Length: 561
Image 1 (cartoon, rainbow, N blue to C red):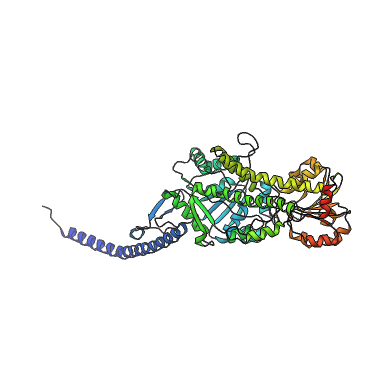
Image 2 (cartoon, rainbow, N blue to C red):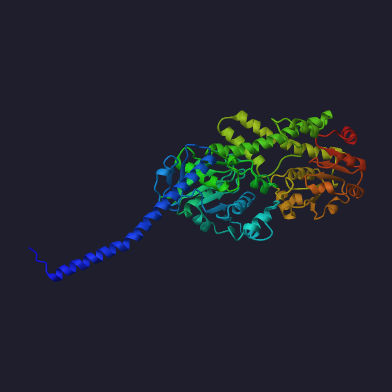
């Protein structure tokens, strides 16, 4: 039996008093903490519900499961049907705040600039190994010419838009990585001249794998063959030294037209996002990218598809557009034989709502980095799947484009008494279309080579293409027969003929009467874009050839001779 002394009783009373005081001192903080947790729970439930509804509309999937990628953490999923019964201790967001783009070219630069402009909460870094190109992006002389691009870049650069050659740092920091590298046609080996060369893409994937320490969403921005994501996923998984890192691959093809890229980015017809929407991770990745575009693109224009459909959609879109150009160019040849006017034919059929008016302007041929490359790639894929007849159909589109360029050169030579040797031919325009300095696959290259082979001396003027670019495209041997001018008047003086290769608006404003006076007679105009006032030129005294238009009697007699 323990005997409680007076001193012991005093000790117990003092301890009890301390315990009561200590408990009371903790009561209010605990109540405040649980009240805060309850409030946070309600708030997070509301946010979850709102985000789920918004993303489900973007994805048009009522069975959406909302997924969120947290850096260096596993992916967490919340079902729309259960989100209100959850008791999360954090607020969920479906978007990321750090983006990297590998490739600072015609697609990567403008696209990332627009994302930075419309999403000021996202830090965007564009990386490229080309120091000269990055320096240009960080200067007032951007490496590409695109109306409106200067203003967009200047509004964001140094704030949430950065251009760098430090690829490793940008990849490590980014939650989402866009890959916008060149995918040219293979020049050697299997598929030479037809298949896409994915060397740059594979290199980018290996770097991403090597430098990633957290989960990443990888976005295909380059145009790639269908099922490329499958191969890229294998490269990523087999080369990532960091265990537990996940890569979710999306296809988000660009549908930009050079010369109107900023308008196309600001008000796109559609944004296509392809992913593995058959599983939760793929759906979550799509949702995150949807949230980025939803900052300025109406939700009904954000489309989702599976990966392979998105990849093939880009190739098909370019092939269909090129096919329309080749189709109307084929009709232009028939018009010249029958006295029909291709412009009137185009206008008439374009009024058919099933056809529409776009890409129905006859020309010397299509150019640019995409059309021919993508058609050849599409045809090669068909061949690989044993679809030779399908491949032949698409090859014929490229064949018609080549025929149109050859036909144009033949017309120039035959009209000028079947010889252009040592004659000065003024070539106005070298870019493949107006409002861009891009010369990739421009028809002017083949036309120039064709005329040089016949002995012509070419006087070239383009308001946006520097002589260095012409030299790179044409080669040193051809440049012996080409002189580049900084002023159109110098190129036109003492010329025997003028060829219009690019539809620059300024060409329509020239004083053609004054030009006629300084040219050799008869003075010829060969309008490869059908942009000039042909009746006015004929009235001045020019012998005019326009694609798909009734042939000038002088040209008919010259052909007969």
